[in-house]
Length: 109
View 1: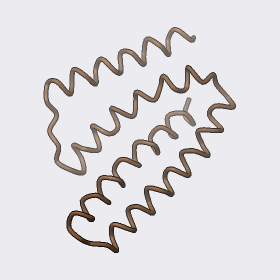
View 2 (view 1 turned 45 degrees about the vertical axis):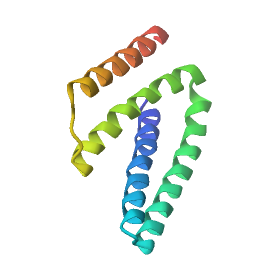
View 3 (view 1 turned 90 degrees about the vertical axis):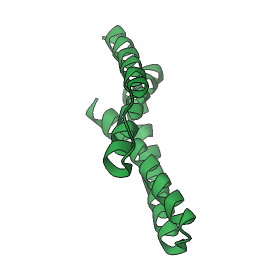
View 4 (view 1 turned 60 degrees about the vertical axis):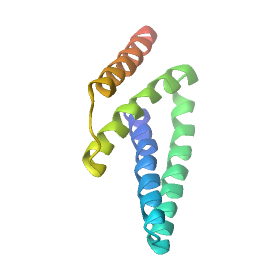
């Protein structure tokens, strides 16, 4: 489970690099755009290699159903790094997603 959720955390970090690349592109900072694009590509490579290891150890439907946790990570990253707001609707949506993940995970045990 630790490998699974570490892998999913790396997948969520990709969205941070993508947003940073987009912000640098909009600011016409080509050098930093390339740095963040390279970081994004490296994180995706790490994610894909680790995801293959995860899939060797657990069923696909179990591993994939846990991907909903990425929604929580990206919301937290938005709050922490980009000053995005947590609204009632977003919080309710996150709660619904996490409840769904919990239902699927406990159904497998």
